[in-house]
Length: 278
Image 1 (cartoon, rainbow, N blue to C red):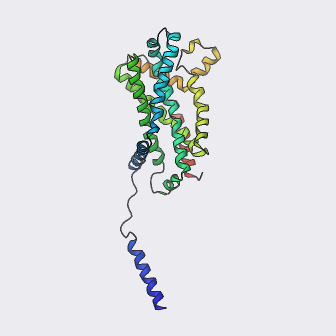
Image 2: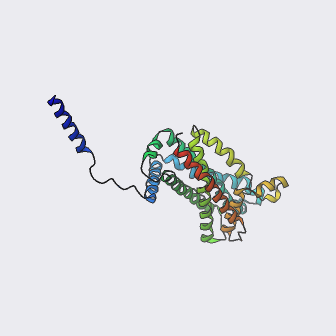
Image 3: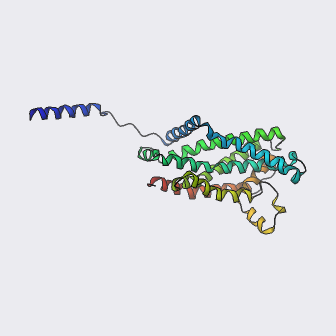
């Protein structure tokens, strides 16, 4: 009996000796948590460089194809068409890239790591916001690649560097807000392929039924009505006006309004889905 008690006492002492006896560490601040998860996303790109394929190869391919396939027919020469096309093709490519946010999130969830993240004493949105911050950096890479290629091909923005930077900033803000819609799909969908199919079903009509490639004045009246209310049209209008130093009118306000709408609607939906078991 005494031996059993002694062994029990020794076991208790051994257990207490390995437990932390000091003050519990303070939970990280929201900004610190966001930076940590943003860096995690960067490390994923480092170990899987193919994640940069969609922000390098695809933008180059689309820019070259549309410039040289349609430039002569629509504007008389590829160089002339490029002045109209470049802001719009940048918008189209970056908006299309946003769907990979939901696909990457769905892949992470399927591996079970997000169950661990939910148990951590951190600001809950930090996991998703950190990922979106890194995705915004990926969008910036795609824009830089396309602007460099456009400059080589003969694109000359009349608005100068400040106009280009303003257009880029507006595009990044809109795409950050739009990405929240795909995070909802990433949490709810069963596979990354399902996320891609559903997002493409939305993005293809939005990007092609717009003024990215041609002036809507050449379209039938009922198509013009659709194009005029399309948020991608407002985004392309704003980008062209800012890059070429022209009056922006109300297009920038429409873009900001659409971005605010997407953020207000889909960010809370994402967090509710994230906080529940899938």
